[in-house]
Amino acid sequence: MEHPGFFERAGPFSLRAMAEVAGASPAGEVDLDAKIKDVRPLDAAGQGDLSFLDNPKYLPLFTQTGATACLVAPKFAGQAPAGTAALVTPEPYRGFARVLALFYPDALKPKAARNGAGAPVDSVDGSARLEEGITVEPGAVIGPEALIGRGTTIAAGTVIGYRVHIGRDCYVGPNATLTHTLVGNRVTIHSGASIGQDGFGFAMGRAGHQKVPQIGRVIIQDDVEIGANTTIDRGALRDTVIGEGTKIDNLVQIGHNVVIGRHCIIVAQTGISGSAELGDFVALGGQVGVVGHVKIGAGAQIAGSSNVRGNVPPGVRWGGTPAKPMRLWFRELTILRQLAERKDLKFEDKDGGE
Image (tube, rainbow, N blue to C red; front, side):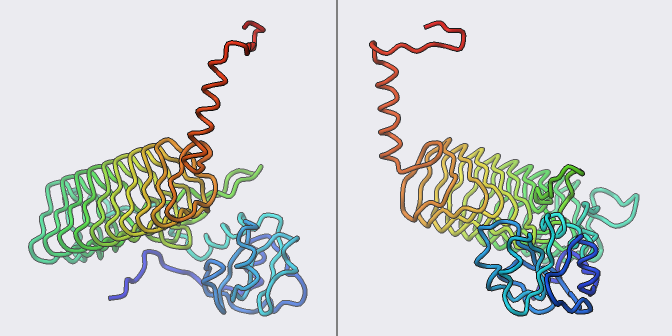
């Protein structure tokens, strides 16, 4: 069964309206009466879609996009492919945020789990669908059009939001919150986890930081386990994906658009920034930090407290800040220790003392 989506889309709107809302100007001859039906990433956009280019890293995708129009900075306008209208603005990301808000105004702020004021807090919405053999403990709230599979337990104080789907034989622990999320079978989510909330997306500027609506979802595949107080943000345009069999420890933060492969291990207090991608069987030690838009290859292992700032090849073992091959990291540490222990070297502190 195809999921109906979490947000209602407005429109279509003319390209002229898009340009006005985004504060952009068309480059060259453009049919401003053309209709825009939706907003999509560069590599998924087609006719009737609008996209944007803000990060030069995605320039190759821009030159091959099938979008009807794209918001771009002036220096990239000349590289728009045939059939794609370039809407030029010095702040494409801020302009795109305004366009997103026009198409998806409901995504600008969270909505209540239940419709109507005064609804009892320990309630299941009448439009929710629950298969047989489900346990719903006191204080749980199950929102409109939610779907929960056979053998699943929803523990006390848990909130299951609008149109959330949870598969069979799952466990959702006390005081967890799930919105904008599709969950597979045999998934365990421990207490206090927050899944599907807004990704941290703001177009920064001197006029203030403009919120970028987050219209993606969280997809949790079969046999995943998610630790207590872990947070997983929904995608901005794409989905945030947790692959089959992956195990996530307590107190992990996973940003919007992150894609985690199958059977990964992610240890406590790790933070994975938006749009990072982890291949299958990746292992991240405790307190690892992963910057956004990087790829960690299948089977790679990252030592605890390391900082990943660039792409990591498959099958390697890296560590350090910034993360590097383990042998090189150990060599650097050894040399630094030897320098620090040398008696013939003198070091002055900031006050001029030895």
